Image 1 (cartoon, rainbow, N blue to C red):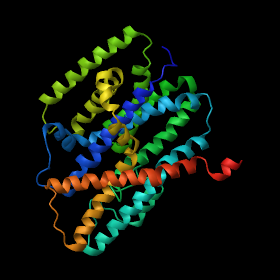
Image 2 (image 1 turned 45 degrees about the vertical axis):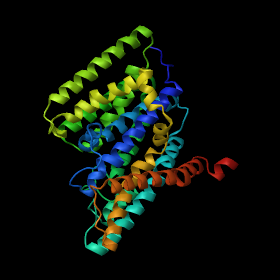
Image 3 (image 1 turned 90 degrees about the vertical axis):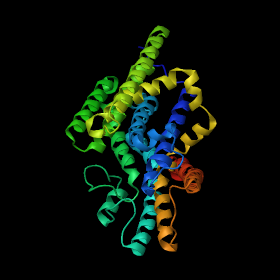
Image 4 (image 1 turned 60 degrees about the horizontal axis):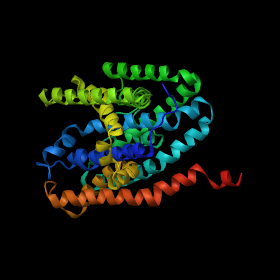
Length: 363
């Protein structure tokens, strides 16, 4: 196997586009249920899956993260070309500023709503303890009593843990790190099966599954092998969807739907998007790759926007109609607009600054 094979720039764009679709699916469609509409506007067959099974897109994020980290960091960590301090500074600069901003936005919206109505919207646990957990970025690492403040940030706190584990696995085992990653994936599978911290377990399984995916699929070293894997991937994806379509639509997380998505559907889908230009070009389009670029801000801001809408409604007596198409479009536009502003005026400039502060530049 040729370990020097890497995805092309076009394939990396496809990953950005896929990440953009996942962020839109969670922020605009799946979590629209927070408004509790009696009927979802614009619900057609194409979007119905996002409303019912959009929870699984977080697991797609984990897989994509593992895949991208294997591409960008595994070799430099294995060769000890990057220190842990530099590695974590890059990751914290990437994630923490937007997390902190959206945490305070959620806190302000919930505090005002609590004063006006006597309860907080969407997520409970509005207390100092859970605020401290969020500040420390450990809000979903076995210490919490449920969702709090900017709830979706739970997955980012799990990712921070995974980044640390990934570094030490690659740094310690070096060229044998693939086997250690496989063990990590099995640990995640065991924890998930036993119900021991399902959110952390989902992250472990998805992330290290993404690392293994990179080795198993993207490093095929002959055209014949590539063609064989493509055809096998197509057949498996069709089979999974046929089985899934015939299965009970109420099949829930605990009875196996999660495993179908994480272990079969998403890896095969990613492989086909990367391997087939006809499919991949859809995800290379500028709108989708741009949404992928701002996907972190989009993912992190949508709940604070929802809380702000609910707080405004409570303050002025606005009886908004979440079944209205105008309301839906207004919400989607506000979330996208907010994500664009945050990304360009806050996330990106601050990330660049924190990665290379003036003291470091002068040194």
